[in-house]
Length: 348
Image (cartoon, one colour):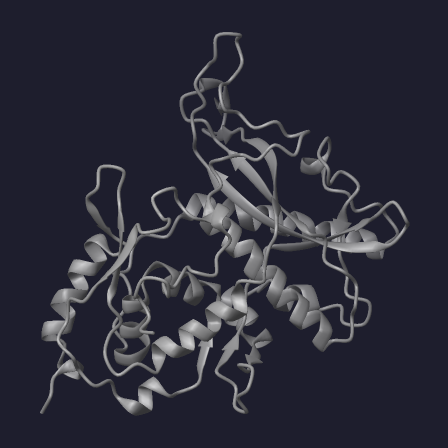
């Protein structure tokens, strides 16, 4: 079956709870927009180095994924960097690295922001025989360019040659001890938002997550879950490669810091020096990971790249019955122009 046809969509292996409500039986169809064009065989068959973002792109639009890797068309125009989100994540990662140094000096290493949560006894994990392991897989310092060095080949069942080299850039790996005294590793991902919670009738913030419970915070949708699942799958492979069999805890945690811009108490101004202080609320949001969908999806990605023509555009039906192109929108329109005008797509 062709990638994009009903029953073989890019997201067919995802757990149902990850999908928006408008995806379901008989609500997805394929729509071919382009004339047949033969892709460049050398580009199509090259061995790719993929990260979690490559999987995201395929899930959003197999057509866009195919065009990027077969014709080197960028999936989106460059945009401004989310500097505040990056800064808060970098600071929390730096704190974890500092605590890791404390552990090596015999101190507790517990993170203050996790107190009062299910992770209050967790500490940053240190690889038993490779002290640089965490920095490499978490890309510190250097970001994805460093974590790319942890790429491992993925070979599809029944084939001899690797299809992809795959890597991922985790935020943090912590360690906990279960009731039986056994160590487990916990994947932690730092997130930042600027969300306002409306005040409820009882004087409480309606919808504000409870940091001391495992209630799911609905603002964390499928893409965050996909991210955590991918990190679990990649971390397990990297651990096995280094001979470490320590189990990964089935629940990942998003450590979420929020700056409510409508709450004046969250901003203070120093009387001297002109300094401004921002005060964040912190929440710990759990996610029960599932990674069984990843390898079947990687196989679909390989099928996609081996196609001679671009996959059909995936569409869904909204609650009002109108077609909705699956994650293409304005970028899809841009691709229509690129496809018709880019020199590499023309026949000579």
